[in-house]
Length: 363
Image 1: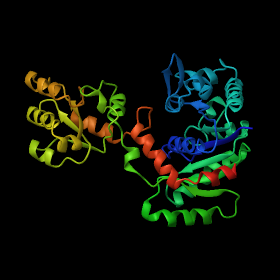
Image 2 (image 1 turned 180 degrees about the horizontal axis):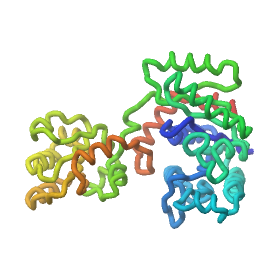
Image 3 (image 1 turned 60 degrees about the vertical axis):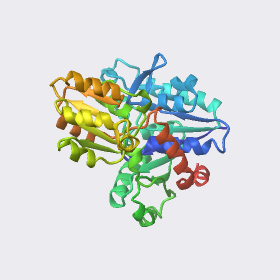
Image 4 (image 1 turned 180 degrees about the vertical axis):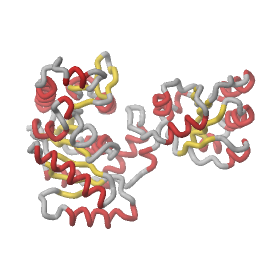
């Protein structure tokens, strides 16, 4: 018999995918066959000739189960889907039937199945299948991922619990994630007090780690919709800091932190040449992850030759440096199949912080 767990969250960016990856890794140490499913896919891509959710594609690649990717992503919210559903052009039972059928087949193949929701409890309501309803339909106990505070976490959990209870879904675990390290014990103590009169277990996941929130060069390229040029082996490199190269060249170089993505205006020949030249020096290669070169003015021929010869990773775009800077600063990095550094880090930390046996016992 296949054991199931539904990974929900109180909102976006709580860390559902990180927790799902962690549980996949930990479950594989106990169960022979561990599967994954993303019933509703709000962010879809074309993968191996079919349209699937991005997370499903990532899990299928990382865990080598590409043949199951269509079952892992039975419903995707491609453009126009919600309008067609509300206009009555789709069978209102189609999403539920597709999710149910896919889950039944995955249960036949696996001993432990991780089902990841999308966003907060209400996501998917527009097609009649929100997270809470899916968990109830699939009879999957729910683990609800939250942020790392106290008051705001309790408020968010109560708001989501109301929907899960209305749909008769069984929330058994609250997992606080992205905890402030020095407040971890205190935070968990108060959360346990808040839910002491319920049957819900309160547990914890990761401390807040900037590394897990930092984008890779490939993510930046995808976000901007432009190619990453230079050394292709650096595409998975994490960008810990995003810095605007507005000061003098010497001051900019002196102020570089580790693995900085430097945004430079295309007319700053001296800074572009200096940064490119330093790419060959290990001390500065560690500090400078790559460049985003912005501006309508063309880069001079000699400067462009120096950039290309250095093989420093860079992205060229027409927007001004300040526009790029604010766009990237607002970006929240997501995990992709290329992010082996992040995935390996997640797995190693999960073994220390997540009590899989306690979670398994609750479901």
